[in-house]
Amino acid sequence: MLELRQLSKSYNGRPVLDRLSWQFQAGEFVSIMGDSGVGKSTLLNLIAGLDTPDAAPGESPIIVDGLPMSGLDDDAATRLRRTRMGFIFQAFHVLPHLTLLQNVALPLLLNGLPTARAAEMLAAVGLAGREHDFPHQISGGQMQRVAIARALVHRPALVLADEPTGNLDPDTADAILTLLQREIKATGACAIMVTHSQHAAKKTDKILLLERDGLKETTTVKPFAQ
Ligand SMILES: Nc1ncnc2c1ncn2[C@@H]1O[C@H](COP(=O)(O)OP(=O)(O)OP(=O)(O)O)[C@@H](O)[C@H]1O
Ligand SMILES: [Mg+2]
Image 1 (cartoon, rainbow, N blue to C red):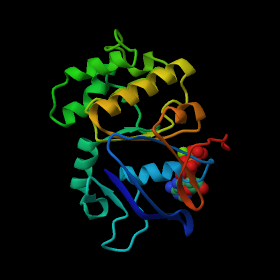
Image 2: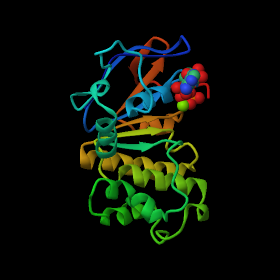
Image 3: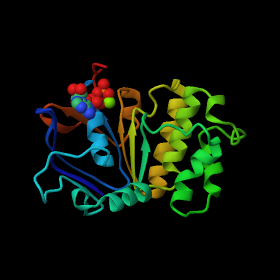
Image 4: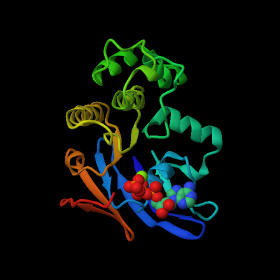
């Protein structure tokens, strides 16, 4: 579903990611842990196509569904993002001038899909009855839940989440993780979640540790520097 082949990224000559290779499978819920500043968000941004990896011309270190990302022009990359990916990133804010329902329906509208599932997703994240509220009328944690509903509504094949439960209370965080799990199993999507929470990581199928020398699978999670 997603393959990283010798993925590298440096900023101003300072390497952050150095020749990472990994294969992510459809239907897999994977968490990525690691110390602050090690490059977790950088990795998700690269996979999302929001940043470009260091690569020689003609090389593509990121392959989604067999498609080399570096070979795509802007339109094709946008289409791939819109149809196949769902993002739960802090930077992808809920739009303030749209109601919660309109926010969640947006990926469906952009993909020309029926919008009925938007209300179902809002209910699934515990926001039934709040469809016609605007983002300024809800809390930060509720906003995060809207972002999660929006990321999953069009049944993306690849879900990328950066600390999706970071500002949620433990019960809500659990409910969100269960929802993510259920969606992944129901749709066969692959989800990659960056988290500092050992509790959240333990709910995933596989825990990857990002360190200076690359990605490795782990079963023992230790507390990380935040
Ligand atoms: N656009 C950028 N320009 C320059 N340096 C950057 C940029 N983005 C990230 N970095 C640097 O890359 C390194 C990795 O940052 P990144 O945000 O990926 O870490 P992280 O693992 O997500 O950390 P955290 O757990 O604190 O979110 C940091 O040293 C950061 O300063
Ligand atoms: Mg980060």
